[in-house]
Image (tube, rainbow over all chains, first blue to last red; front, side, top):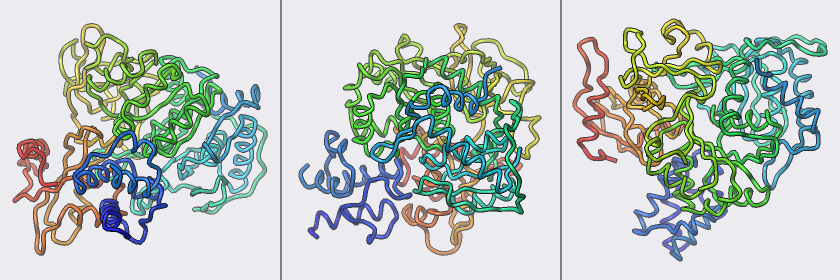
Amino acid sequence: MDSIQEKLFEIIAKSLNISSSQVNEELRIGSIPEWDSLAHLNLISEIESAFATQLDVGKLLYAEKVGDLLNIVKKG
Amino acid sequence: MHQLVYKRILENAAKTPNRTALVRPGEEELSYGQLMQHIAGAKKHLFKVGVRSSDYIVLAASRSFSFVYGYLAVHALGAVAVPLDPQTPAERLKYIRGVLSPKAGFWVSGEHGLADIAIFDGLEDDDLGEDIPVDANAVADAMFTSGTTAQPKGVLLTHGNLACAVNNINMFIGNGPDDVEINPMPLSHSFGLARLRCTLYEGATQIIIDGVMRPKEIFKAMDEYKATGVGMVAPAWMVLKRLSGDFISRYCEQLRYFELGSAPMTAEDKAHLAALLPKTRICMHYGLTEASRAAFQEFHEPQEFLSTVGRPSPLVEIKIYNESGESLPDGETGEICIKGGMVAKGYLNVDNETVFYGDYFRTGDLGYKRSDGYIVLTGRLKEMINVGGKKVSPVEVDQALAVLPGVAEAACVGVPDPMLSEVVAAFIVAGDGERYTLEKVRELLAGVLESHQIPQYLIYIDEVPKTASGKVQRLQLKDRWSQMHGGAK
């Protein structure tokens, strides 16, 4: 696991208040009770703040799982 | 008198059995004929386990076909459906079970069958009669919504209320049998459930989607099923917009209607959506679970009307009353009160005398009526917080916080949020021990409260402001939050 992935997984676990063992690239956005739309908005803001970036709307549109969020963060 | 909703759906099924009623993209589809068979099967099963007229039946309102036919079967038996979020915290469920003494509960998660049945009471065994008479004045749904008290209130909606609401809505929007609607809203919430009823009442097709967080699924379904309509609460649209920008404009030739509601939107946001979908009928309502879709507006109306909540829906009357229960003339601000066939008969186990002024339901919202009939919302009389269209009782959150070790007292208020209309801000007076961070409080309240009830802001204060009689002065806390320009998130 590289440092970006580690940091992103940590943010997701903390933001959704879930165990880090639940977070993996295949975890679908919104597939667990803790991950509702309010939590998702908070998470997007926290990712943007932690990586000092603005996530591209054109790419967020296609994000379905944690791995997709990781790609967006890595590739911008 | 309108036809009862479940009867009309069964009639549609008999007329057009091959038409598609429900779709879960990539998973399954159900024709009206199949829906009718499932309703009949569920009805027989419920009857067999002893469910009878007026019994309360708790249903886990998941986005599953089994919930839909279970819900309609409960209605067809003359029993009362109590649709709850499948994630309802244990404490809340315990309270609801305590006040209702429901006969049975159906907790279906994932599987599309009526498999997970919990029987709460001694049940009889009997044969199902041919057709069980159901009166329009009989209660169809008990919808639990946060009230101004600590505990949720059960809103009692009759079959007549549901039928009247469906007709008002479909008349304004212009729904028809050829519509294919995307519904990403939870069916445990009055908005999503109403969209389901409206679509099936017309014999149209409903596409059930798991929320707006994966926009690709919504747009893929729009392409694949050639959707003509979509319904979502205003905050859900704000989330979808955040995640997909102006992408929805690609469907400007395809979408015939878009229904929004449950929380306010700014005139700018309304105008923006109208510009993205210039040919779509974009209808936004003002209403409550207790008085569904009391007023409507269409976003292509002249800009000056976008700062209002629209005009009363067909067959609905709205009056403004002062605190003495006197009707006020146009232009004067008071409590918005609603009269119409869709207005609930009241709340479960509550003295409903105080809920109405005559035939007019008291919304607890403040506003005035313009001389042209448009209603302007100016504030809220009740202290309820509106998080993304879901009502939160501040007292309920206060009490959940107050039992945490190290919290002497707590008081919550709603503070503005650009996406969700409002979010919860908690003011805490420290007791003995360490002070909490917001993250810690959120962690401790997860599982105790529903996610939208959990505070987004945490501010420590020396004392909770109160009146001489001991009532929490929440307006003072709101002012304080405003002065802090965002608080200590």
